[in-house]
Image 1 (cartoon, rainbow, N blue to C red):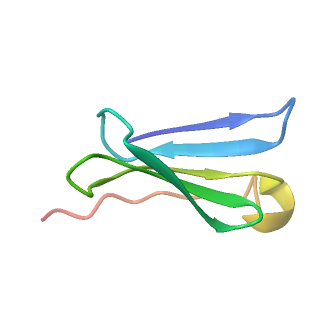
Image 2 (image 1 turned 90 degrees about the horizontal axis):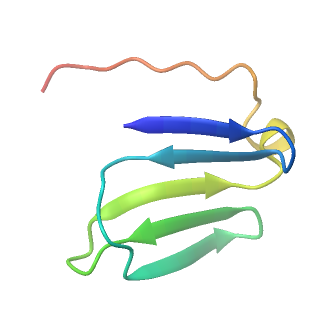
Image 3 (image 1 turned 60 degrees about the vertical axis):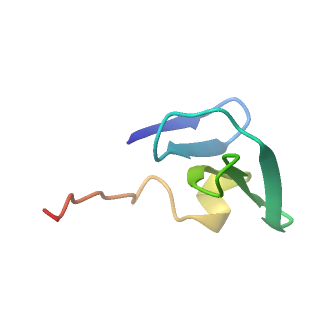
Length: 65
């Protein structure tokens, strides 16, 4: 998983897994998800991230499967 915050556009992008995007779906006016051809979730993008996602208070913890 990779995360990136683009300060110039206040966009937060989470890449969950690599792959070719077959479709981008809007969840709401600020949130987009990228989906692969087999329906797998590839990425989540949030516009106006500081207001919508409480950045920079983002934390991440990996839990073993």
